[in-house]
Length: 119
Image: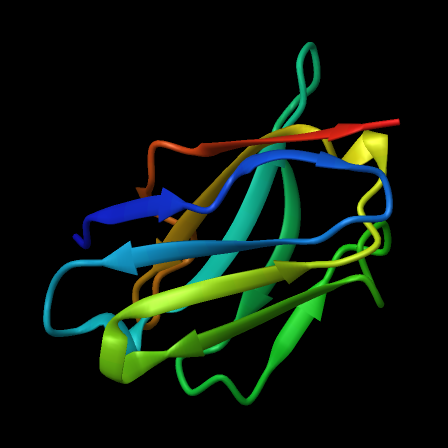
């Protein structure tokens, strides 16, 4: 298991930008696939983006493609998500998650960070 702590959320106007960070504990961070998910009020949690252990593969939900960028720094045990051109519908609690090598699911989760986009 890896411990995850998100930061970087806040209140921003539509069209603005935020960068989320997720710091991980442990020496095996570089072996984990990492992901960002979000949950808006009254809605189910949804996938946002994922990045492979090396950073060589990324995948995005259609709703954020071209606006969000996921990247990682394995030397700092941190994964980031740069969010540009934010929209009110991006308002949600954002969670980072880790999936161990060979594991079928994201099994470690952070506590979440609130992102609010005003119109």
